[in-house]
Length: 103
Image (cartoon, rainbow, N blue to C red; front, side):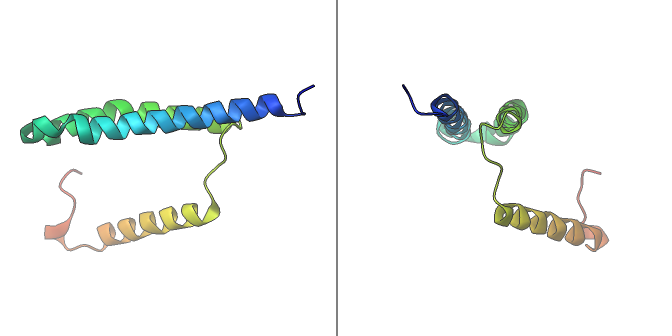
């Protein structure tokens, strides 16, 4: 008889493999595939990020909600939160000529 919980372990490994290969594909498209198109890189990169970014995010959130992937550690969440606080404060207190263009 297989040990208890072995099926859950198999599904967790599959979920990690799915996220790994989705991430590798995403980064490969952004970096390796676009090298010949460097004169149009900004336009192409925006399209790829807006099309594949939500797919990767939805896959991560789905696997996270199913409990197949562990949530990020608190240290990482604290660092990300501190980054967003710093960005928000710098945007709010920036001089008029340094503000974001797209409002």
